[in-house]
Length: 179
Figure 1 (cartoon, rainbow, N blue to C red):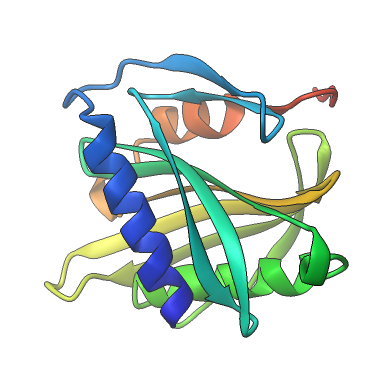
Figure 2 (tube, rainbow, N blue to C red):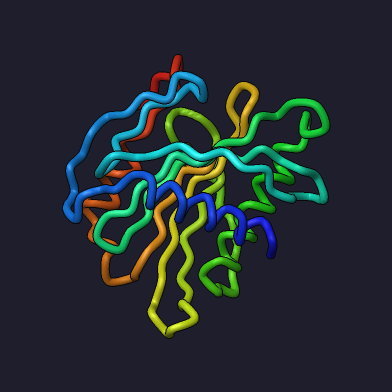
C-alpha cells in the first residue's frame, strides 16, 4: 500500500535527522502545534509529507526516533478541507497500511481508551523481507481537529515490556486529563 511506503520514508528520514544515540535517553518533548507531549527515548525529528490516503493528498506529519531496533513515532493528520469528517476512514487506512508495512495478515483494530480519549488499538506481528520477526503496536484516535497515531514498530525480540510501557504511558494530549 502506497501510504506506508511514504510513511516509512518519513519515518526513516526523521530517524536519520534525529541522529539518536544507541541507548534509551528518555526525554519529554512537547509538540505545541499538534497539541501533545510525548516521552521519546532519544532526540526526535518532525517531518511532514503529502501522502495518498483514500485517494486524497494528505499532509501526514511524524515525530519519530529509532533506538536499538525500535521505531517510536507519533503521526498526525489535520482534519481540514476534504478530510473533515473522514477520521474513521483515515484510522482504518493507517492501520491497514501499518499491517502491510510489516507484512502482517491482520489489521484488526479493537476499541480502547488511550491518553484520556476513545481510541482504536492495533497489536500485530509480521515479518520483514529478510525474515526478521516484527511487531507493531499502535493507538489511533481523533482529537479536536486531527487524527493521531502513536506507534512502536521493530524486532519482536526488542519489545521489552518496560520500554513499551514507558513509551505508551509517556504520551498526553494538551488539555486532556486521564488516569
